Amino acid sequence: MKLEEMQAVWSEMGDQLEKQKKLTDKMISMMIQEKYRNKLNKIAYPEILGAIICITAAVMILLNFNMLDNWYTQVSGIISILVLLLFPILSLRSINRMSKVDIAGNNYKETLLEYAKGKKQFMKVMKLSYYLGFILMFVIMPVTSKLIKGKDIFAESISVWTYGIAIPLAISFFIIFSRWVYKSYQNNIDAAESLINELEEND
Amino acid sequence: MSKELEFTRIIREHEGVIFKITTIYTNNHDDQKDLYQEIVYQLWKSYANFRGEAKISTWMYRVALNTAITRLKKEKRRGIQIGIDKIIMQQTQQYDTEFEERLKVLYTHIHGLNELEKGVMLLLLEGKKYEEIAEITGLSPSNVGTRISRIKQKLKSQIVKK
Image 1 (cartoon, each protein chain N blue to C red):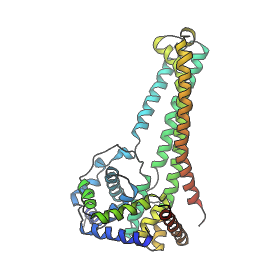
Image 2: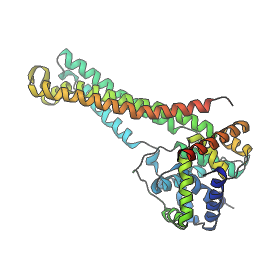
Image 3: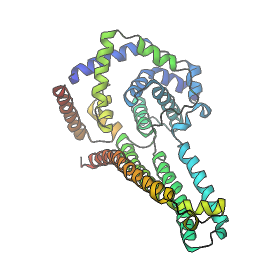
Image 4: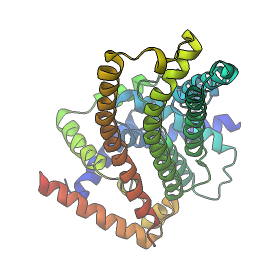
């Protein structure tokens, strides 16, 4: 379809829309009220929920840190707390950056540039979160085992199932999954990057 | 006339414009309804600061386009929706099959463009002059011309591919 043809179709649609005006004053009045707004699109609830879970878990470990009575569970505990705190800080920070774009004051180019930069940052954080998640999966095992059951998994559960099947399976899954994560996020990061370059091209 | 009444009048006058923007930046009816509502809300929020320095349509396109691109796309997360379902359904159901087909082709072309091109294309289709496109987008008029040439080339290559 050529541009001229597209313009003709667009204009025909415009004419038809003009004839079918359907909005009522009541609808508009409702739309401008905050309570009817779909805030779920703006505020990333899963990220907020995730942050609450992470912070709660970090606080629980911190409060019971004295139960971790040897160096390796203590190191695991510290790493777990750091990862659990890092997760929400990074993701909420990048979401906040994207939602702070000045819709009324910016022009389209400025908005697009700010948003693309924020999106790129967010995608990088998400990619990093997946990798940190796998690290957390391993370091939190001895910690939770100690805190919940009072057991030291390194000393007590040397079984074929743990070291022969479960851990190699988890590692293989991690390798496959991380490749998929890398690919899917990288595509989005590349797209944002190319848009940023295009927008920053000199006039 | 109260501010709200004045705003309502403006929205009713330009409801087709908002509808067209929502069709370009969304892929399904639910997202379209959400975006429609969000645009009207953002327009209302910024209406208080609108001092009439720019044309009302320029302000409207600017806010609507900015809202469309900054909306985090989180599908299947619904808030309360005003009864605009009927508007969107009815508006698209009244077209004849042939026109519907042409519209589909048009949308396929537009969805193949990147976000910057999409905005320029929309304004071009709306019949805006280069200067006004430049004012809304923040590009220089000469850059608008360059972008439009690139869009034309892109459209040509899309036709060749098919």
